[in-house]
Length: 195
Length: 241
Image (cartoon, rainbow over all chains, first blue to last red; front, side, top):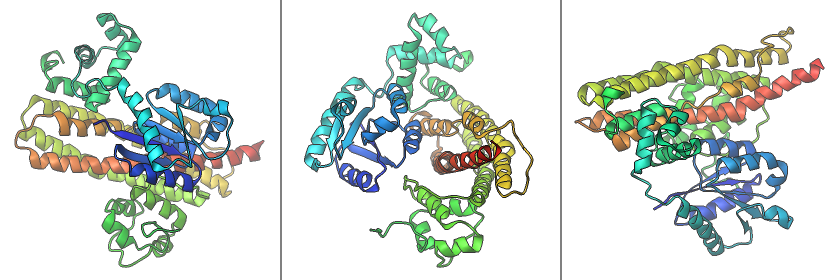
Protein backbone atom coordinates (compact mmCIF):
# COMPACT_ATOMS: atom_id res chain seq x y z
CA UNK A 1 0.00 0.00 0.00
CA UNK A 2 1.13 3.49 -0.76
CA UNK A 3 2.77 5.28 2.12
CA UNK A 4 1.57 8.70 3.09
CA UNK A 5 3.91 11.23 4.65
CA UNK A 6 2.37 14.47 5.85
CA UNK A 7 4.06 17.71 6.82
CA UNK A 8 2.42 20.31 9.07
CA UNK A 9 3.57 23.92 9.21
CA UNK A 10 2.20 26.13 11.93
CA UNK A 11 3.73 28.57 14.37
CA UNK A 12 1.33 27.50 17.09
CA UNK A 13 2.52 24.40 18.98
CA UNK A 14 -1.06 23.71 20.07
CA UNK A 15 -2.30 23.56 16.50
CA UNK A 16 0.57 21.56 15.04
CA UNK A 17 0.81 19.06 17.90
CA UNK A 18 -2.97 18.68 18.02
CA UNK A 19 -3.20 18.02 14.30
CA UNK A 20 -0.25 15.68 14.45
CA UNK A 21 -1.83 13.54 17.15
CA UNK A 22 -5.09 13.28 15.21
CA UNK A 23 -3.28 12.38 11.99
CA UNK A 24 -0.87 9.98 13.71
CA UNK A 25 -3.76 7.77 14.72
CA UNK A 26 -5.10 7.50 11.18
CA UNK A 27 -4.60 4.12 9.58
CA UNK A 28 -3.10 5.07 6.24
CA UNK A 29 -0.89 7.89 7.49
CA UNK A 30 2.65 6.64 7.66
CA UNK A 31 4.42 9.59 9.22
CA UNK A 32 3.64 13.13 10.29
CA UNK A 33 6.43 15.71 10.47
CA UNK A 34 6.04 19.15 11.95
CA UNK A 35 7.69 22.47 11.25
CA UNK A 36 7.39 25.56 13.42
CA UNK A 37 8.91 27.97 10.91
CA UNK A 38 8.89 28.37 7.16
CA UNK A 39 12.65 27.67 7.05
CA UNK A 40 12.09 24.36 8.77
CA UNK A 41 9.43 23.48 6.21
CA UNK A 42 11.84 24.19 3.33
CA UNK A 43 14.50 22.14 5.06
CA UNK A 44 12.22 19.13 5.48
CA UNK A 45 10.88 19.35 1.93
CA UNK A 46 14.41 19.13 0.61
CA UNK A 47 15.18 16.04 2.57
CA UNK A 48 12.10 13.89 2.45
CA UNK A 49 9.24 13.34 0.09
CA UNK A 50 5.78 14.23 1.31
CA UNK A 51 2.38 13.65 -0.22
CA UNK A 52 0.64 16.44 1.68
CA UNK A 53 1.47 19.71 3.39
CA UNK A 54 -0.92 21.35 5.84
CA UNK A 55 -0.43 25.00 6.75
CA UNK A 56 -2.19 28.05 8.04
CA UNK A 57 -3.45 30.29 5.19
CA UNK A 58 -1.52 33.25 6.56
CA UNK A 59 1.71 31.82 5.13
CA UNK A 60 0.27 32.50 1.68
CA UNK A 61 0.35 36.17 2.61
CA UNK A 62 3.80 36.23 4.18
CA UNK A 63 5.63 33.77 1.90
CA UNK A 64 3.69 34.02 -1.32
CA UNK A 65 6.54 33.75 -3.83
CA UNK A 66 8.37 30.99 -1.95
CA UNK A 67 5.20 28.91 -1.75
CA UNK A 68 4.55 29.40 -5.44
CA UNK A 69 8.03 28.16 -6.20
CA UNK A 70 7.73 25.19 -3.86
CA UNK A 71 4.46 24.18 -5.45
CA UNK A 72 5.98 24.11 -8.90
CA UNK A 73 8.97 22.12 -7.61
CA UNK A 74 6.85 19.62 -5.72
CA UNK A 75 3.85 19.34 -7.97
CA UNK A 76 2.69 15.97 -6.65
CA UNK A 77 2.16 17.35 -3.15
CA UNK A 78 -1.33 18.33 -2.05
CA UNK A 79 -1.26 21.72 -0.34
CA UNK A 80 -3.95 22.00 2.30
CA UNK A 81 -4.98 25.07 4.29
CA UNK A 82 -5.78 24.77 7.99
CA UNK A 83 -8.45 27.28 8.82
CA UNK A 84 -8.85 28.47 12.38
CA UNK A 85 -9.99 32.01 11.85
CA UNK A 86 -11.68 33.84 9.03
CA UNK A 87 -9.63 34.08 5.89
CA UNK A 88 -10.83 35.53 2.60
CA UNK A 89 -12.29 33.02 0.18
CA UNK A 90 -9.88 33.88 -2.64
CA UNK A 91 -6.99 32.97 -0.36
CA UNK A 92 -8.48 29.62 0.61
CA UNK A 93 -9.20 28.86 -3.04
CA UNK A 94 -5.49 28.79 -3.72
CA UNK A 95 -5.16 25.55 -1.74
CA UNK A 96 -5.91 22.07 -3.03
CA UNK A 97 -8.24 21.71 -0.04
CA UNK A 98 -9.08 23.18 3.34
CA UNK A 99 -9.52 21.54 6.73
CA UNK A 100 -11.05 23.35 9.66
CA UNK A 101 -9.96 23.14 13.27
CA UNK A 102 -13.52 22.16 14.14
CA UNK A 103 -13.35 19.07 11.91
CA UNK A 104 -13.56 15.95 14.04
CA UNK A 105 -11.35 13.00 13.31
CA UNK A 106 -13.87 11.26 11.13
CA UNK A 107 -14.40 14.28 8.95
CA UNK A 108 -10.68 14.99 8.79
CA UNK A 109 -9.99 11.43 7.79
CA UNK A 110 -12.65 11.49 5.05
CA UNK A 111 -11.26 14.71 3.57
CA UNK A 112 -7.66 13.54 3.65
CA UNK A 113 -8.46 10.20 2.06
CA UNK A 114 -10.30 11.89 -0.76
CA UNK A 115 -7.33 14.17 -1.52
CA UNK A 116 -4.78 11.41 -1.19
CA UNK A 117 -6.73 9.14 -3.53
CA UNK A 118 -6.63 11.73 -6.27
CA UNK A 119 -2.93 12.09 -5.62
CA UNK A 120 -2.16 8.38 -5.75
CA UNK A 121 -4.12 7.81 -8.97
CA UNK A 122 -1.52 9.86 -10.73
CA UNK A 123 1.48 7.80 -9.74
CA UNK A 124 0.03 4.43 -8.97
CA UNK A 125 1.49 2.74 -12.05
CA UNK A 126 3.73 -0.07 -10.90
CA UNK A 127 6.06 1.25 -8.23
CA UNK A 128 8.63 -1.52 -8.31
CA UNK A 129 9.88 -2.58 -11.69
CA UNK A 130 11.12 -0.11 -14.25
CA UNK A 131 9.28 0.33 -17.54
CA UNK A 132 11.03 -0.49 -20.79
CA UNK A 133 11.54 3.20 -21.50
CA UNK A 134 12.92 3.86 -18.01
CA UNK A 135 15.39 1.04 -18.56
CA UNK A 136 16.51 2.67 -21.81
CA UNK A 137 17.07 5.97 -20.03
CA UNK A 138 18.91 4.29 -17.17
CA UNK A 139 21.19 2.35 -19.53
CA UNK A 140 22.29 5.52 -21.29
CA UNK A 141 22.61 7.39 -18.01
CA UNK A 142 24.87 4.66 -16.63
CA UNK A 143 27.01 4.92 -19.74
CA UNK A 144 27.68 8.52 -18.83
CA UNK A 145 25.35 10.30 -21.26
CA UNK A 146 23.88 13.70 -20.42
CA UNK A 147 20.15 14.46 -20.37
CA UNK A 148 20.49 16.16 -23.75
CA UNK A 149 22.29 13.19 -25.30
CA UNK A 150 19.72 10.77 -23.90
CA UNK A 151 16.89 12.91 -25.26
CA UNK A 152 18.48 12.97 -28.73
CA UNK A 153 19.20 9.27 -28.79
CA UNK A 154 15.73 8.21 -27.68
CA UNK A 155 13.99 10.93 -29.64
CA UNK A 156 12.19 12.39 -26.63
CA UNK A 157 12.28 15.80 -24.97
CA UNK A 158 14.68 16.68 -22.16
CA UNK A 159 11.69 17.14 -19.86
CA UNK A 160 10.59 13.58 -20.54
CA UNK A 161 14.12 12.38 -19.71
CA UNK A 162 13.95 14.27 -16.42
CA UNK A 163 10.55 12.76 -15.61
CA UNK A 164 11.89 9.27 -16.34
CA UNK A 165 14.91 9.92 -14.13
CA UNK A 166 12.66 11.08 -11.31
CA UNK A 167 10.56 7.92 -11.59
CA UNK A 168 13.65 5.69 -11.73
CA UNK A 169 14.95 7.23 -8.50
CA UNK A 170 11.56 6.96 -6.85
CA UNK A 171 11.24 3.29 -7.72
CA UNK A 172 14.78 2.24 -6.84
CA UNK A 173 15.44 4.63 -3.94
CA UNK A 174 18.74 5.54 -5.63
CA UNK A 175 19.38 9.12 -6.69
CA UNK A 176 23.04 9.49 -7.68
CA UNK A 177 24.20 8.55 -11.17
CA UNK A 178 27.03 6.44 -9.72
CA UNK A 179 24.57 4.58 -7.48
CA UNK A 180 22.23 4.01 -10.42
CA UNK A 181 25.13 2.67 -12.46
CA UNK A 182 25.71 -0.04 -9.86
CA UNK A 183 22.00 -0.83 -9.97
CA UNK A 184 22.16 -1.09 -13.77
CA UNK A 185 25.07 -3.56 -13.53
CA UNK A 186 23.28 -5.65 -10.88
CA UNK A 187 20.17 -5.80 -13.07
CA UNK A 188 22.28 -6.69 -16.13
CA UNK A 189 21.13 -3.61 -17.98
CA UNK A 190 24.74 -2.85 -18.82
CA UNK A 191 27.75 -5.08 -18.58
CA UNK A 192 30.95 -4.04 -16.89
CA UNK A 193 32.72 -4.20 -20.24
CA UNK A 194 31.01 -1.11 -21.56
CA UNK A 195 31.25 0.71 -18.26
CA UNK B 1 1.83 20.95 30.22
CA UNK B 2 5.19 19.26 30.28
CA UNK B 3 5.01 15.61 29.41
CA UNK B 4 7.23 13.00 31.01
CA UNK B 5 9.17 12.56 27.79
CA UNK B 6 10.02 16.19 27.30
CA UNK B 7 13.64 17.13 27.66
CA UNK B 8 14.41 19.96 30.05
CA UNK B 9 17.41 21.12 32.08
CA UNK B 10 16.44 18.89 35.00
CA UNK B 11 16.28 15.71 32.88
CA UNK B 12 18.84 13.07 33.76
CA UNK B 13 21.21 12.39 30.89
CA UNK B 14 21.55 8.70 31.78
CA UNK B 15 17.81 8.19 31.34
CA UNK B 16 17.80 9.96 28.00
CA UNK B 17 20.71 7.84 26.76
CA UNK B 18 19.01 4.59 27.75
CA UNK B 19 16.09 5.33 25.47
CA UNK B 20 18.03 7.27 22.81
CA UNK B 21 21.54 5.77 22.54
CA UNK B 22 22.58 8.09 19.70
CA UNK B 23 22.73 10.87 22.33
CA UNK B 24 26.16 9.37 23.10
CA UNK B 25 27.29 10.89 19.79
CA UNK B 26 26.07 14.27 20.96
CA UNK B 27 28.10 13.92 24.16
CA UNK B 28 31.19 12.94 22.19
CA UNK B 29 30.81 15.95 19.91
CA UNK B 30 30.66 18.12 23.04
CA UNK B 31 33.76 16.27 24.30
CA UNK B 32 31.88 14.82 27.27
CA UNK B 33 32.76 11.26 28.32
CA UNK B 34 30.68 8.59 29.94
CA UNK B 35 29.94 7.76 32.73
CA UNK B 36 27.55 10.58 33.52
CA UNK B 37 26.34 9.23 36.86
CA UNK B 38 23.01 10.80 37.77
CA UNK B 39 23.87 14.22 36.42
CA UNK B 40 21.15 16.39 34.95
CA UNK B 41 21.53 18.40 31.76
CA UNK B 42 21.87 21.57 33.85
CA UNK B 43 24.73 20.08 35.89
CA UNK B 44 26.59 18.77 32.84
CA UNK B 45 26.20 22.13 31.10
CA UNK B 46 27.60 23.93 34.10
CA UNK B 47 30.61 21.59 34.26
CA UNK B 48 31.36 22.04 30.58
CA UNK B 49 30.32 25.63 30.23
CA UNK B 50 27.63 25.04 27.61
CA UNK B 51 24.43 27.07 27.18
CA UNK B 52 21.60 24.94 28.64
CA UNK B 53 19.03 25.99 26.06
CA UNK B 54 21.39 25.05 23.26
CA UNK B 55 22.14 21.68 24.84
CA UNK B 56 18.42 20.96 25.27
CA UNK B 57 17.75 21.93 21.64
CA UNK B 58 20.54 19.63 20.37
CA UNK B 59 19.37 16.79 22.62
CA UNK B 60 15.87 17.14 21.22
CA UNK B 61 17.29 16.71 17.72
CA UNK B 62 19.13 13.55 18.78
CA UNK B 63 15.90 12.25 20.31
CA UNK B 64 14.05 12.62 17.01
CA UNK B 65 12.02 15.60 18.13
CA UNK B 66 11.91 17.62 14.98
CA UNK B 67 10.97 21.06 16.03
CA UNK B 68 13.63 23.55 17.07
CA UNK B 69 12.48 26.27 19.46
CA UNK B 70 13.52 29.81 18.70
CA UNK B 71 16.79 30.22 20.57
CA UNK B 72 18.25 33.44 21.79
CA UNK B 73 21.91 32.78 21.05
CA UNK B 74 25.04 34.84 21.58
CA UNK B 75 28.45 34.85 19.94
CA UNK B 76 29.75 32.51 22.66
CA UNK B 77 27.22 29.96 21.49
CA UNK B 78 28.53 30.31 17.94
CA UNK B 79 31.91 29.10 19.20
CA UNK B 80 30.30 26.19 21.07
CA UNK B 81 28.49 25.23 17.87
CA UNK B 82 31.56 25.39 15.59
CA UNK B 83 33.53 23.28 18.10
CA UNK B 84 30.69 20.77 18.19
CA UNK B 85 30.58 20.60 14.40
CA UNK B 86 34.37 20.32 14.15
CA UNK B 87 34.29 17.39 16.58
CA UNK B 88 31.65 15.67 14.49
CA UNK B 89 33.82 16.22 11.41
CA UNK B 90 36.57 14.26 13.15
CA UNK B 91 34.08 11.54 13.99
CA UNK B 92 33.18 11.29 10.28
CA UNK B 93 36.61 11.48 8.73
CA UNK B 94 38.68 9.62 11.34
CA UNK B 95 36.21 7.10 12.70
CA UNK B 96 33.04 6.11 10.98
CA UNK B 97 33.85 6.59 7.28
CA UNK B 98 37.14 4.65 7.53
CA UNK B 99 35.26 1.91 9.42
CA UNK B 100 32.65 1.73 6.65
CA UNK B 101 35.36 1.62 3.98
CA UNK B 102 37.04 -1.25 5.76
CA UNK B 103 33.82 -3.25 5.89
CA UNK B 104 33.17 -2.60 2.20
CA UNK B 105 36.68 -3.88 1.46
CA UNK B 106 36.02 -7.00 3.54
CA UNK B 107 32.69 -7.57 1.88
CA UNK B 108 34.21 -7.09 -1.51
CA UNK B 109 36.89 -9.72 -0.78
CA UNK B 110 34.40 -12.17 0.62
CA UNK B 111 31.66 -11.59 -1.89
CA UNK B 112 33.53 -11.78 -5.14
CA UNK B 113 30.77 -10.27 -7.25
CA UNK B 114 31.96 -7.70 -9.72
CA UNK B 115 29.40 -5.23 -8.41
CA UNK B 116 31.16 -5.08 -5.07
CA UNK B 117 34.25 -3.67 -6.78
CA UNK B 118 32.04 -0.91 -8.12
CA UNK B 119 30.72 -0.30 -4.63
CA UNK B 120 34.28 0.13 -3.33
CA UNK B 121 34.99 2.70 -6.02
CA UNK B 122 31.60 4.38 -5.39
CA UNK B 123 32.33 4.78 -1.72
CA UNK B 124 35.94 5.89 -2.16
CA UNK B 125 34.77 8.62 -4.55
CA UNK B 126 32.03 9.62 -2.15
CA UNK B 127 34.49 9.79 0.73
CA UNK B 128 36.62 12.19 -1.31
CA UNK B 129 33.57 14.42 -1.83
CA UNK B 130 32.77 14.35 1.88
CA UNK B 131 36.36 15.16 2.79
CA UNK B 132 36.35 18.15 0.45
CA UNK B 133 33.08 19.32 1.99
CA UNK B 134 34.40 19.00 5.55
CA UNK B 135 37.74 20.62 4.67
CA UNK B 136 35.90 23.60 3.24
CA UNK B 137 33.95 24.06 6.46
CA UNK B 138 37.02 23.54 8.67
CA UNK B 139 39.23 25.85 6.67
CA UNK B 140 36.87 28.55 5.48
CA UNK B 141 33.45 28.68 7.06
CA UNK B 142 34.28 27.97 10.70
CA UNK B 143 37.25 30.38 10.83
CA UNK B 144 34.98 32.98 9.25
CA UNK B 145 32.38 32.48 12.01
CA UNK B 146 35.16 32.72 14.60
CA UNK B 147 36.22 36.05 13.07
CA UNK B 148 32.67 37.32 13.28
CA UNK B 149 32.61 36.34 16.94
CA UNK B 150 35.91 38.04 17.68
CA UNK B 151 34.70 41.20 16.03
CA UNK B 152 31.47 41.00 17.96
CA UNK B 153 33.51 40.92 21.15
CA UNK B 154 35.75 43.73 20.00
CA UNK B 155 38.84 41.52 20.08
CA UNK B 156 39.77 42.39 16.53
CA UNK B 157 38.71 45.49 14.76
CA UNK B 158 40.07 45.26 11.25
CA UNK B 159 38.23 43.76 8.32
CA UNK B 160 38.91 40.08 7.87
CA UNK B 161 37.71 37.71 5.19
CA UNK B 162 35.86 40.65 3.80
CA UNK B 163 35.43 38.88 0.48
CA UNK B 164 33.53 36.10 2.13
CA UNK B 165 29.97 35.92 3.40
CA UNK B 166 27.50 33.41 4.78
CA UNK B 167 25.55 33.51 1.53
CA UNK B 168 28.58 32.03 -0.28
CA UNK B 169 28.61 29.21 2.21
CA UNK B 170 24.93 28.57 1.65
CA UNK B 171 25.62 28.18 -2.07
CA UNK B 172 28.50 25.83 -1.41
CA UNK B 173 26.57 23.73 1.06
CA UNK B 174 25.65 20.54 -0.79
CA UNK B 175 23.85 17.40 0.16
CA UNK B 176 26.25 14.74 1.42
CA UNK B 177 23.62 12.34 2.70
CA UNK B 178 22.20 11.29 -0.65
CA UNK B 179 24.84 8.72 -1.57
CA UNK B 180 24.60 7.11 1.87
CA UNK B 181 20.93 6.49 1.25
CA UNK B 182 21.77 5.17 -2.22
CA UNK B 183 24.22 2.69 -0.73
CA UNK B 184 21.71 1.57 1.90
CA UNK B 185 19.15 0.92 -0.82
CA UNK B 186 21.67 -1.03 -2.88
CA UNK B 187 22.58 -3.20 0.13
CA UNK B 188 19.01 -3.72 1.25
CA UNK B 189 17.34 -4.23 -2.09
CA UNK B 190 19.73 -5.18 -4.84
CA UNK B 191 23.34 -6.21 -4.27
CA UNK B 192 23.62 -10.00 -4.60
CA UNK B 193 24.74 -11.81 -1.48
CA UNK B 194 27.33 -14.49 -0.84
CA UNK B 195 27.68 -15.43 2.83
CA UNK B 196 27.95 -11.82 3.84
CA UNK B 197 25.04 -11.53 6.24
CA UNK B 198 27.12 -10.41 9.22
CA UNK B 199 29.22 -7.84 7.35
CA UNK B 200 26.19 -6.52 5.51
CA UNK B 201 24.31 -6.03 8.75
CA UNK B 202 27.26 -4.28 10.41
CA UNK B 203 27.65 -2.11 7.36
CA UNK B 204 23.97 -1.14 7.35
CA UNK B 205 24.06 -0.28 11.05
CA UNK B 206 27.10 1.95 10.54
CA UNK B 207 25.52 3.61 7.51
CA UNK B 208 22.35 4.28 9.51
CA UNK B 209 24.38 5.73 12.37
CA UNK B 210 26.30 8.16 10.20
CA UNK B 211 23.18 9.06 8.24
CA UNK B 212 21.41 9.87 11.50
CA UNK B 213 24.25 12.06 12.71
CA UNK B 214 24.70 13.81 9.35
CA UNK B 215 21.02 14.62 9.19
CA UNK B 216 21.18 16.40 12.54
CA UNK B 217 24.50 17.95 11.60
CA UNK B 218 22.98 19.70 8.61
CA UNK B 219 19.95 20.78 10.64
CA UNK B 220 22.29 22.42 13.16
CA UNK B 221 24.15 24.14 10.34
CA UNK B 222 21.14 25.30 8.41
CA UNK B 223 18.68 26.10 11.17
CA UNK B 224 20.96 27.29 13.97
CA UNK B 225 24.49 28.24 12.88
CA UNK B 226 23.71 29.95 9.56
CA UNK B 227 20.96 32.20 11.01
CA UNK B 228 23.25 33.06 13.94
CA UNK B 229 26.16 33.88 11.61
CA UNK B 230 23.90 36.07 9.47
CA UNK B 231 22.79 37.86 12.61
CA UNK B 232 26.44 38.52 13.54
CA UNK B 233 27.18 39.63 10.00
CA UNK B 234 24.30 42.11 10.00
CA UNK B 235 25.45 43.61 13.26
CA UNK B 236 28.64 44.79 11.54
CA UNK B 237 26.87 46.02 8.48
CA UNK B 238 24.75 48.13 10.78
CA UNK B 239 27.84 49.47 12.55
CA UNK B 240 29.79 50.12 9.35
CA UNK B 241 27.11 52.14 7.59
